[in-house]
Image (cartoon, rainbow, N blue to C red; front, top):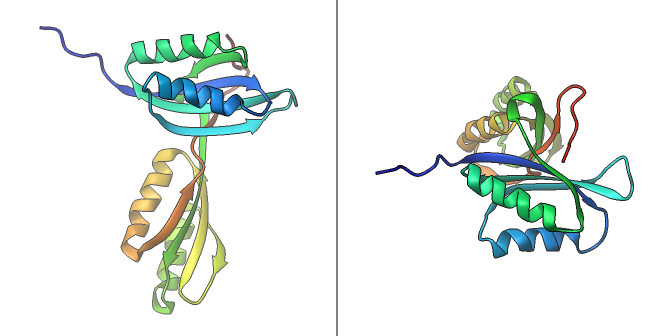
Length: 170
């Protein structure tokens, strides 16, 4: 009896046309193929004609291969490749609002300093903090903050570039 292939996270980087409708067409491709997107970040690049998409998907190597093949068929997709997490700079931005009674503020500020988070807003009952880092750092920070009561949070999704001289190749 053969086992199923191991499912893991894959980071796909794609250079796409910087035009309206491209995001809809690419996300539609994922929906039609029943692939879930765990994280998606899109931004303009140094070339105003191109946007960079960083897409995190979960699946085995065959799923990754199929996704890349399907993306490469789209005229809007100029370059596509998988990034190796060990050879890339990975970052995510978190904004999180937590309950912050006056007697807990010093403790919360210590937690913020420990994680190198910035306090970006204070109100009588809450604090909003900003943190950038690897997703594992963001996850750890969120877990620590649950103790104080998270009111709401927003994460950008992963953005990534290959380290050193490497760059996206087809």
